[in-house]
Length: 120
Image 1 (cartoon, rainbow, N blue to C red):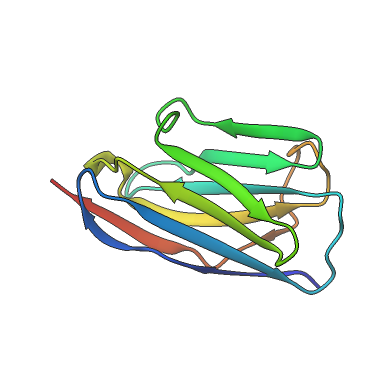
Image 2 (cartoon, one colour):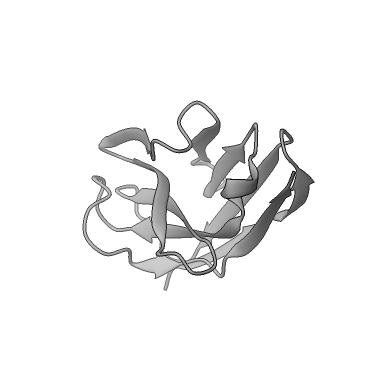
C-alpha cells in the first residue's frame, strides 16, 4: 500500500520561500504522476502543479514562474518549491500520487497535507 507523508509547511512573510516535501513509501511503481493541490478557506481545491512519467511539469497559471515541482526518484520524494510567496498562496497544500504517468483521473493516494500561511 502506498503512503504519502508531507513536510515543510509553515508561516512566512510575502516574498519568502518554502519547500514542501512528499515522501512516498510502500509499493512504488516507476510509472506514476505526482501532483500538488491546495485549498484555501471557503474555496474549492485547486491543482497547483504536477509531473509524471509521461507528463512534463505543469502549473496553475497563478503559480507559474514562482513554484517548481520536481522529484528525487531515488529517494521517492516529490518536492514543491514555493518562491516569491504571496498572501493569496495561503492554503492547505496536499500531495497526491497517480498510478498513471499522465496525471489523469483520480489520484491513488493523498498526503496528510500541510498549512502554508503567507502574511503581508
